[in-house]
Each structure stands twice: as C-alpha cells, then as structure tokens.
Image 1 (spheres, one colour):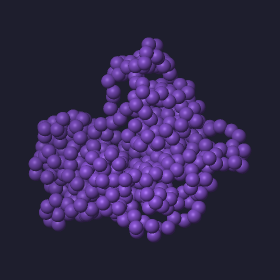
Image 2 (spheres, rainbow, N blue to C red):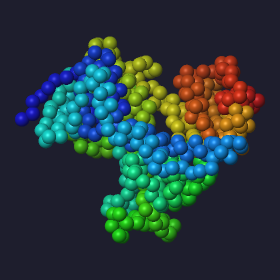
Image 3 (spheres, one colour):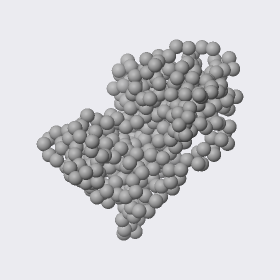
Image 4 (cartoon, rainbow, N blue to C red):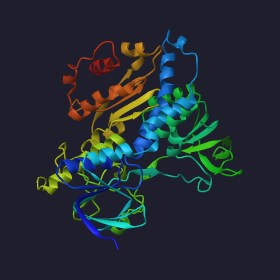
Length: 479
C-alpha cells in the first residue's frame, strides 16, 4: 500500500513550464517535487522548438547567402541531409535528459519519475515505473503543467493508417522522398520548408491559406517563400481520407476534397494541438479530458474551489508558446511562494510579478519560415473587438537600407497597430528575412505602452533593419 508523503508543492509535468514553476517556488523557500513520466525538459527541448529550428537553419543560411551577389557564387553545393540531422540530434542530446535532470537536482528540486494524477484535494498519486505508487500531499498547491498534444482531425482512415506527428518529423532519422503536410499553420509551414530544402518532394495542404491567422501580406510572402523552396502549396483544399494499402511501411495515399489523390512516403499531420489533460484525474473535479484549464492571472484554476490547484503553460490554452509557458511558470512559482508566506492575500495586481498580464496584450511569436514572421500584441481586428479605436501603419521593408544590405531584392512588410486615443502601439507584425530580431523592441513598446511621441526619440542605428521604426513613425505622422 502506498504511503503518503507531505511536501509544499507538487508540479505535474517536467517540461520547461513545470521546471520554471518548480524553480521559482523553490527559490521562494518551498519544498517542491517535480513529477514527470517522459523526458525532463519537455516538448520544446526534444521535439519542438530546438530540433525544428535546427532543421530549418542550414537551409536558411544557404538561401541567405544566395540572395547576396558575390556570396551567391560561392554557394556551389547542396545541403547534406545526414549532416543536418546529426546537428539536429546534438540539440536534443540524442533524446537524453540527463543534463536536465542534473540541472533540476542542482536547483534543489526533487524529481519523481512517473505519471501523476489528481487523487484528492491537494493530492497527487504517481504511478511509478516499477508498478508501484507514491502519494504526494501538497501543503500549498498542486500545479498542472502537462502541456499539449497533437489534435487529430476528423479524416477517414487516420485512426488506422500510420502518420507522422510533429514529434516524428523533428526526430526523423532520414528524409522521406515524398512528404504530404496536412495543415499550413506555424508547424506545418516550418516543417514543409525544412524538408523541401533537405530534398523531399513536399506538398502542403491548407484548408484556407498559409498562416491563416496572420495578416494577408504575411500569407502571400511566406507562401511565395515556400514555393521558392520547392514546396507545392495547395490552398483551399483538405484531406478527406488516408490509407496505406500495402501496410504501415508502404506508400500513403491521401484523398482530397477536390477529388484528387496524393501519394507519398510519409504524411505529416500538423493541424493543431489541444491541452494534455486526459488521465490526470481532473474529471473528478468536473473538468473534461482535453479541456483547457482556465486560470486567473496568478495561475489558479477557476473551476476548482479552495485555490489549491494551479496550472501553467499550454494546458491553460492561454498562450501556447514555450516562452509564454515559462513566463507563466515564473509567475505561478512566485505566487505560490508569496501566498505560502502570507504576502499575497488577494488577487494579483496586473503587471506585478504574480500576474501573467502579458498573456492578454503582449504575446510575442516568431514563425521561423523563410521569410520569417514576427508578431506581438493585438491585430487590428482583435483591438476593435475589444472596443479600441485603432489605426494601422504599413511599411515595405524592401525600402529600408539595412534590409537591402541583408539581401538583394529584399522582400518584406511591417505593420503597427496604434491606439487612436492613447497614441501607443498595441501590436506589430513584421515579415521578411531576419525580422525575429525586430520583435523584442516591439514587445517592449507594447508592454511599456510607450507613446509614439516618445518613440520618436528611440533613434535606430543606420544602416539596420530597425530603421523600419522611423519609417513607420514618419508614415503615421504624415497621415
């Protein structure tokens, strides 16, 4: 029979979000146990952010060189797929988490290997690898940080035909000859381009358009970049059926809703993700499997009375990005420690260290396609839906001197969303080579609510792509 052990905080999920919760709670003086059944460090370290960007980078480096006359003549070969995959594997440490475990232990955290489930108020039962169980009772709080999992679309045959998820695509040991990618969102677009540049014949299927949640100019420029990389982009079509008639290792046939059929070696399904809440015992608290855990800004789950259950990261559905999960993890860890010490008796103040306020107004995101997309804050339609009167300002990035030095015939676009009443930036979008490095300045402008009159005095160095800020402000002033 399992015995019960009492600790201050139990964190279920040892990915980057859970690590940050545990670290910050421990820094605040609490005894923390981290429960993880898989690799400590989670999805980003082994199957998402790091390996996917490692797959993308070599192709981007070669393409960037080919856009500069004089350098282009030096690029005479093609990518070495085996070398790219080897380099990718170094970033995952060959899917070995020993360095992450060493970090956790060095930070004063206790790791329990196993699958945790909520088994009572402030209680987690862990199914251990040896078949036994350990019960952990939390004095101050239980935190769910289990991330998200791929959502399977309702396509006939997917439940029986083998297909790739993003995990399979980022950990593959060889490049398939032909690849069909279902879903043209962030993951689908990135991986389609990566594999096309590695030599695969790639077809990307989009029910509407590429990167449908971004402004139309973004879709056009990224779609063109995918086509240049060799991706066959098909918009306005979807899959209705999948089969592997010759068995799991045979060809995959994908039937489309336009009546055509595609044949490939692999099918990557990248149609979104859902919170990973199944099997966590949350149904006993009235929360359905797959349902996001709605939280307040300090991370407390709103559906559970008593304030003992917290959640952070993708599992909340708020801002499913690694950096936002880590941000929320830091907030939750600090809030738990503050409440345990009696320093946070009520709700957390916005923009304090105990509130993830940025989730509502200043979430930065980069799409690492070529061209890149960088966005933060509210789009114009989102701002108007919130009752804000806004104006938009646009700039052709190809007219910026610093951008023209980066690449011959540089193609790019920028947009600011400006609050008409307060004259502050509510959102920004950039698309073009290397625009990810423009994003943090925009994030600071949004979070700091810096008036445009003050932004005039943030003088961009010349010649850099950051000069786009001056051109946007000039365009806005001349209206």
